[in-house]
Length: 522
Image 1: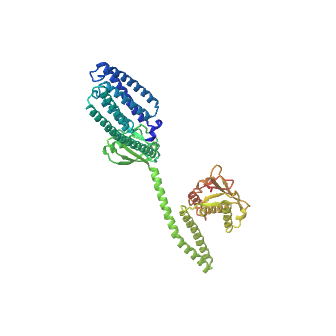
Image 2: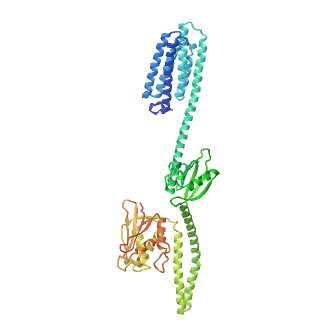
Image 3: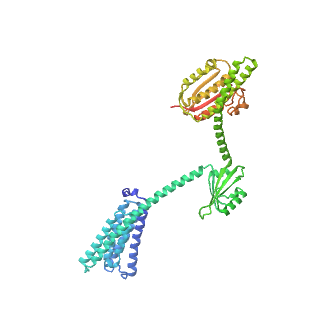
């Protein structure tokens, strides 16, 4: 409330209340003047001094008009204006009461109205001061009457009762004002919370992937979110369900007769299968809710869940296969060593080769199952690439001369084991298809301009990938090599996605060119 002492901090509703209070003062002054001029002293007005009454009342009207002018400018501040108006009311009404013969004129009641009105308009502030001011005016009027005129001393008792009424009215007005202020603040908070909740609800409905329609009993669409327009391929703002389909309108009419939750599968005019869920209104408004769900998305989500479950099952099966597979491979080796027969040796080699291929396939499947266990760390390109090439040299002696590492020693974030797996697969494929020339395979790292990303390139001078096969290289179990598993590039892309990176196949230069874009380290 202290902030309200400044005129610019007072809410508009305070000034509006003060305007009605000022208008009331102007009306009272005008009624007094009209009554005296039309009916004389028959209404107990101006019975003691008519000239003083008229002059005082005209001055009262002029002062009330001046207060309205100050109110329009809102200067001076609110509480000063209110105090000046109450003081003027007490002064003029006391003089008018004296000119009308005292309390018998009934003007003292208007002082009660002034005290109560000032307490409510000022929200309870300085109410007791206004009551004291009115009491002083009443006592001064009665004292002057007792000194200058023949007055009954018993009038002081009635004056005292009136003053007690002033303070009682002031206290009541203060309590009411505090309650009004409390309720108003509560209403403002509730209104702000409700407005926020409505905005949140509107945003949720707007951004929902499912369509939402609010329709009345006649099928008129009252509200529709963007998803509903997208699913039905028609704008339903102020439209009707019949504009979408007569079949849908007929189904909606049947639901309205049953008045219970229901649903059906409906094919929209654009051919998209939709699941429509009907919720009747819980009140007497007649509005119902229709939820539209894209069945294609539902089926795709179900397929993803099936694939995820199948992947976990496959990983478990692969883990269980590994032990007996190792036993088969070991048995084939023992068989080849114990019996020098060429046929048995050849059969043992076939068993060993296929066991090794199956082992690689199991290893790839298990690696795919560990894609979600990414633990990114800061890696430096030059040191990581050199260590990888040295390890490759143990399996292919030409790797040191055929692989050229370039680019700055950039730092990036990636799981060390995952990046080792991805680059190992890309480089071994490049060694298989590139020429034997020095620098036939190029490993490069560059910073992506304008971003915090790093791009790694693996290029070779081989024949490249045929255009007809480019769209299939990342598909699982696709391979052009009889001994391959077809999971290398697929697992590579999955591991990159697990590290918030992207593995792409670029155009031939003229050989194959792969790019990995990942987040750089600060």
